[in-house]
Amino acid sequence: MQSLEPILMAHPFFRGLAADDLRLLVGCASNVRFEADTIIAREGDSADQFYLIREGKVAVEAFGADRGSVIIQTLGPGELLGWSWLVPPYQWRFDARAVEMTRAISLNGKCLRAKCEENTRLGYELLKRVTGVFTERLAATRLQLMDVYGKQ
Image 1 (cartoon, one colour):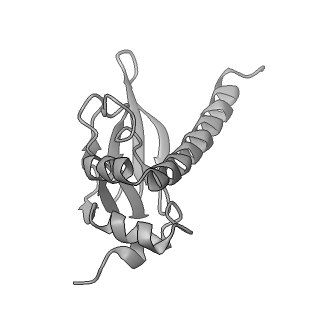
Image 2 (cartoon, rainbow, N blue to C red):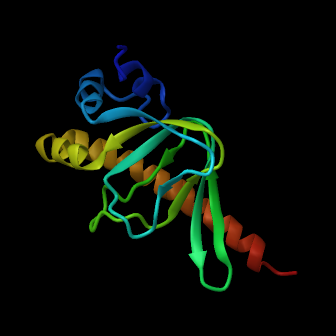
Image 3 (cartoon, rainbow, N blue to C red):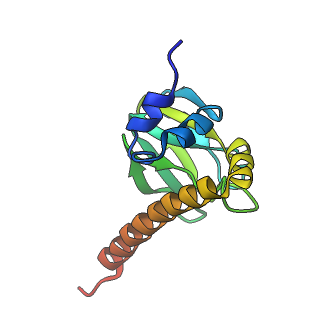
């Protein structure tokens, strides 16, 4: 069986992370596969993991009583799904559904939080990386809102 270390190292989210840190994270990682239309996460459910998408597409969705499920964003290879594992109360904030067959690396949030408590330098590094994802997604949401509600 091949180690997940080279796969983690190649993913943009972990690119440039120290080899010692990657070796720590491998113990929290596993390969997963989702068939098309598989629900990966439901809003309000426990956020015990996050995913590094390697192949396929995942729709991040919000539910509105008057509109049903609305796709907020579609994620693909090289992207990260989920940050709720890092933010109490550790519950998913959106639904996530595989649009097509999707391969990913699942990282156990509880395991990662424990490693971050033990190694605060690693914790800070992961926090900076997740914050970078927050920032990109917030900027994309702002552009979507400007498109929807902009002057006509």
